[in-house]
Length: 137
Image (cartoon, rainbow, N blue to C red; front, top):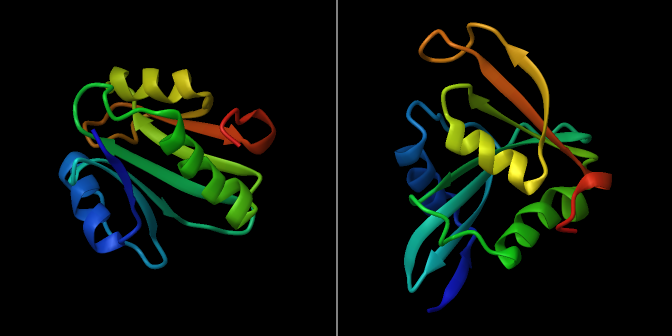
């Protein structure tokens, strides 16, 4: 089984958009995708870089077969080492327990709740990973 990184936004973005309904393209997005035996199985999109923070959006094939330390290291080295941010932010609709569990498992911490901000009228949970707390870089 071979794993390769994919950096082409034109390949990774449609994959992530297929998994996150309503996820729109914005200027200056960057991507790191993961292929297994040539097939896209995970994608991370970075956007909204302001010098201190960048937003991270993750989409992956069902299951945990895509999750490996090398991919996590690439996905966190990019914002923390190459971009030089001090924090990475993400958000999850509160009903998405799998995504919340994933974020918390890899070290994101809940920072805020936006009541009534989700696409279904529910809550959105904001998560943050700070550079000093990231175990992947």
